[in-house]
Structures are given as C-alpha cells and as structure tokens.
Length: 249
Image (cartoon, rainbow, N blue to C red; front, top):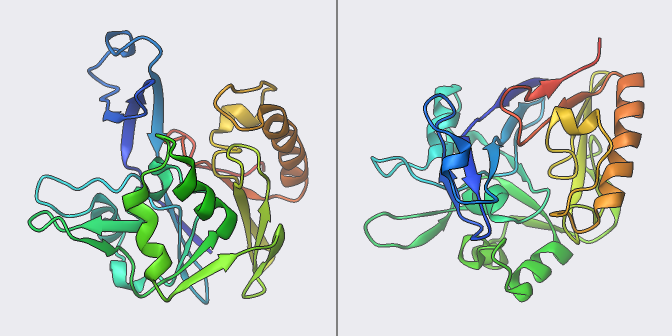
C-alpha cells in the first residue's frame, strides 16, 4: 500500500476555536493569544489494490486562486480528486471535516468535495455534530452529507468495510470518535485520528483536557502502541508533520 501525507501546514488555535496559519520558521508562538496551541493538519491518501482512500478531509481552506487546498495537495501527489474512491472520517471536528464539502468562491454554494467517492461516517457522530452547537463543529461543512447518496452511515461499534478496512468506535477524543485499520498483503496501517494524533503522545502517558475521555485516550494509546509495535503496524499521525508515518523496525 502507498501512503501519501497531505500536509496543510501549521496553525495555532485558542479558545475561539479558529485555526490561524502559523509559519514555524519566522513566527513565535508566544506572540499569539494566551493559551494558543500549535497544531499541524495532515490528511492522508492510501492507495491500495482496490481503492484510493482519503482519511479525514482537512480544514477545507482554499488557496488564493480559489482552489481547495486538499485538491491542490492531491494533484501535487499525482492524484486527480475524482480518483478518490473512499473517504474515511474519524470524527467531524472542523479541522478534520472542513474538506468534506467545498464552497464556490463566487456564489458561495456548497458542494460535496469528492462526489465520486463513498463517505464512511459514524452516524451517531453526525447526529451529535448537528445537534450539539459546539464551536468544534461547523454544520455547513457537513450538513450536505444527509442529502448525498454515497454515504455509508456506520452504526455499529466496530465492523469492516469491504472486508479489509476495520473501524472501531472509541468515544475517546470525541463522544463518537472512531479509528481505522487498513490491511492488505500482510501490511497493517493504523489511523487513530485525534485519539492518537502525534508520535510523541504514543510514547508518554498523559491526560489531555481537550479530550472527551482523556483517560480512555491515554489507555488506548498505550494498548495500540504495544500491539502495533509487536505487529509492525504503520501508524499515521494527523497532527504531526515531523513524523506523519511511523513503523517500529
């Protein structure tokens, strides 16, 4: 399987929940509002013998020419956005789900960003996102999913997609967060979303205040790290541009 990180860059986020671009080479974090966190945003494409899979959809920002950044990043990797066959969503926080749809810069009309793909979304996460009224969710970015015919609403706590993609509901980072394993030809790729967002978090034990169930996140990371290293998983880290892919060798 081929793994392609689609880095969207670094951003700071504070209590406003707004993601502001941050140049790590020229800017100083302390110059941002008190309490600002520095995060990287990085969806992934995985090319298997059956599919071109997008895992989480990024912020949904457009470049200065109006082109969605995720389209630009895909094309840089030699992939036409129309070639994406599956979009797997760990959860629907705006830094992961903004790219589910795209907006026409002139008319403001919203469209499904990958109309030829099937989206795999946890149904309880979608209902929660539309009903909670939290600043972590942007309803206009995801509402169109309810009208799109190619959505597979995942309703079980665990299961399989086309027999080689496994999903499991964790309810750790967000109330209905899910994680994925993709297995092909004796290779396992693991995507933990925001339950396991960075390599350094896998190596240390701590409870994050921003998680729905921080203790569960910590324990799951410990379990995945031990099992994954024993079984030679390839870990994908959505918020880690420095170490987007890790495999213990």
